Length: 107
Image (tube, rainbow, N blue to C red; front, side, top):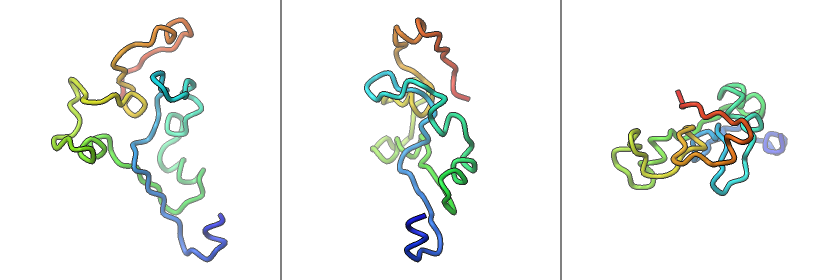
């Protein structure tokens, strides 16, 4: 709103990350999936929620290419941990099962 109030004709929001839709148990404290916008809203719903004219994220393959992986993400054996973007956890954290967290393959 402040940008529009300052005279901008439109606000186009670009995020240099794929949408974070899965909890991270490896260092970033995002244990509750339902608190992540991308887990509960479509890109259009997020755009409306943020009040911007357009919203775009980099793709997961685009992120891999941006860090020098010319062929993108290797689905069978990802080069980096990308669980918060893909839901593909490389190691199952022990406390996930104790809290009833169910792993679901990203679709």
